[in-house]
Length: 333
Image 1: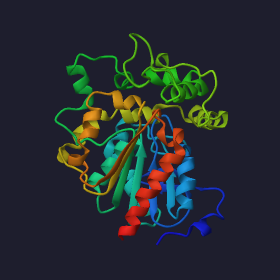
Image 2: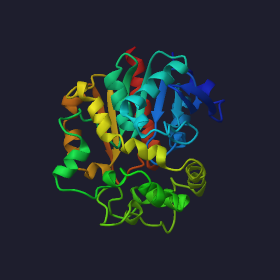
Image 3: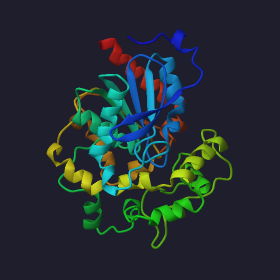
């Protein structure tokens, strides 16, 4: 049963807990009661990227829970690079549901959180009864990993490749953390210039050379937001999040038993029309193939003029789409 909206309206602030999950101490932000909805953020973000969704979902009668993911913010960042595979990340979400005293959840992910959400649904359909991905579409694991495909295509300066060597991207991003956060978030948004932040890098240059400083901040990105992100990344550094990228090939190897498998649960995809990720090779082909790979899909929404940070850039529209999707699931029960 969902909690009534009138009851939830009395809640003003989400709660923050430190939970023991899968060998980690995990910082978890939550609000509301009712069916559990888990929200997985990406890079370089934190649970606060879901602030608008947490309030909206709680107000609609759901228990909205957003962790700082493995390696980010208030959650443990293991020192071993190999402790950031997709199986570790899925395992974190599986154990989080149990730590919350629940047996099932709908899982939602953005950016790197989207592959986590998709794979949670793929590997544990008994636990994750529906899934929403934002920015990164689902594509069944193929015969070759992404990094090998890039090399085979003669590509050597894609940002995924730049992130592989420990210490390189950290040095660049940590030189001025607030500026890094501000430039990446603005430049990859629908408000940014018509360039590709997450894509090919200039020879001998870093990812920030693909970004610009905004003259003014868009209304969805405040100085307070930047300060909150910067305070955490100044404290933790960027290595935990970058280690996700350093396990792309290892994760592909571990996921071989599920190559070609599809997701049957109800699903939803949301992205921005100007999202850099949609410009990657084969990404739109994956979107076009959803009827085969996501046979339970309930909607595919590409929002005009929006960029990569879709849940913040178009918070009101995204909240409406999520609540409609979640309510449709409840109406079937």
